[in-house]
Length: 107
Length: 231
Image (cartoon, rainbow over all chains, first blue to last red; front, side, top):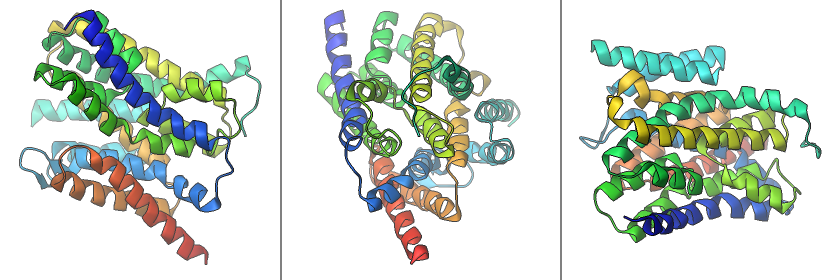
């Protein structure tokens, strides 16, 4: 692809990425939201993060099954305990990567 | 809740909040750059993509689709579907960014990612956080992302696949960000519901629709449990 084609592609991707990020905020920021919406949105962060994480730990994309045997899940257990104890994002990322790397070397 | 003046004292806590995201983004961005290099994408195109799009998972899929020879329309369509989840995050951020001028919101919205969203929401909820600090977090994360992805293209041939647990960086980040959101028993139940729905959905429906579907489904479940408890 040449520069113009790349620019066209990435501008298109940028637009469809930006609009969902911007429009709800621009609209809702100047509205008085009903209480039920405020309450519902309060559960969105925990729901989104769990929905992003769980399939990475439990779905085996090779066999299309749910399993408790993925290395990602086994390493996630000590990583989760570390996160609960320390509440340190940087430490959790480092510990998780270290354990995963070591497990890959020895297993 | 959010002060209207920006002060120098905002910078320190914002850096403190942002560095773990940057730490996670660096290896992930590097890994993306390495794949892009293998797919024949030049460094300047990677820079252009990281500036215009700034969305990790969509960029990974774009590189894979380019390598497979997909059409531009198909790649843009896939990007829209994957990134639509940010509409939920953008809505939730409106809880803490009410009556802010639109130019600020337009700039802020550019940097809403899974990670910056989770960090900023946890801080806003704790109360000692303002919109300028949130903006700094977004843009620091973006800067590191651009540098990391371009570095990955330039140094691609020197980095072996899977080195140093790079593949776990995103999972580690999600785990701790999830911990930050477990405010009550109902939040924990909501997380379990989201996990069950997402895994089942991901198994039966191809693509990434499970993210938005499971998020909305579980949030609705949490909402009704909460309402039942309060009546």
